[in-house]
Length: 604
Image (spheres, rainbow, N blue to C red):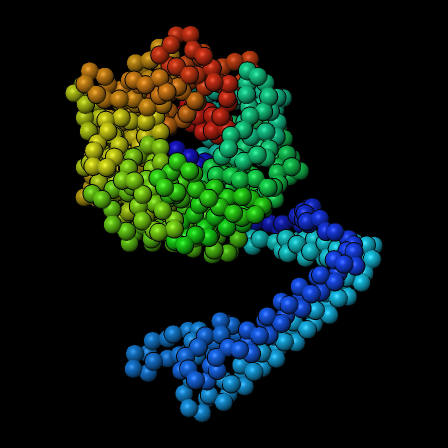
């Protein structure tokens, strides 16, 4: 599962942004005489070529149709018979020919004059000294910086913020529950304080080496992913001093104008989602400002032939690309399908519809496409608009796409019927083709690969138990009871994957082949990296059924994390959950603070 809950909003005047001057390429200040002469020759040749191209073009009046490609002079043609417009094309008929010839001659004269002016300016530039050129460059830099500041000072529109429900629920009356909640809060303090000491400003923490850590999803810059991701957990737990420390770091250090290539999906759910959640909880404008700044940096990722965004984008240049391993350069369903909630909120906060339009375009495109067996494949080529490899999963590569469809409907106060229909259609196909019961009676969600069902379920897919329960209300043909039962069966299966290990922590994925059920077979699948999905499903089941077993299962997981993942410098994942003496991976993931501990604390 991914994003923190996005709650509704507030608005005050926004203070001016403090942006540093943009970087400019280095300019040579002087040119030797021979270089000046060569440059003038090149400019003269270029201008001569341009004039020649215009003078030797065929006479356009001999043709019935031509396109100058200049929007300010285009006249749309209306076919009287059909009423259809063909914008951007001139159709010349009789008396209009003379007027269009004059227009063409006017354009030629304008282009000639512009070229002569450019040549004169170039000659003047070459006569100037080093100091004069430097002064001009500095003047232009100052002008650009001032224009940027003027633009950034424009405040975002004020929007109403409703009362936030559930963020100050008080302490439970039961002493046992109160002690458990305090324990989870102490674990959060341990994780945060050690990050504060050893990894502050880095994206994540290496708690054994006691230094900062990052992966390629965050690029090469220190963007403080743990700070941003954990803010709402700190606020909900009442750790307001820590929250303010994070806010100060964001105000003074969080900068998105860096030459760094990041995952669009990851920075959306962790940064934009984290910033929006912090804004809705605290009302502090800086979080909204930063969220919008980052969103603007992500927009170039959508510049593809289909509008399906690239997986990666450079925050400085705007250049995007896809993962090399992703089915011949495809975009991934769980990535481009997990932008909707944040981008809809961004349009609401800014009054700018571009964010909403980008994600709605993705939805419209998906609706038009054929789906094998009604299933959404995990890969879609952003250049061709065609599916890549026919691989469907509710775990990695697919998971949060389905989650966001359901939550888009809920977020709209159940008025986004299009999202609900897409969710219901998808879940029906998943239940028909992917969900099976093992010989031992465990319900699992397999993966569809090229017409074959692989009987393997990932830890990430365990979120679906909670999703089925959350989507039970409003399901087709009054199937609420069915989906509550299905969610409970998935929760039981995922609990078994934990219970059948030495550490009582679940592996990354587990098989259902022959005598092997809910157990990892390959060594590369036996690790646990502090993931929240199983605990989150327990949380939903507890909230909807109040069956105490789900609280007990959640507490079992908390104790196992405390016993086997806690180290002196924070919390670390483990490499083999079947070994009683596990080796740590030395990474404290940002989502451990943002999701795992939050769900454990709020389940008390």
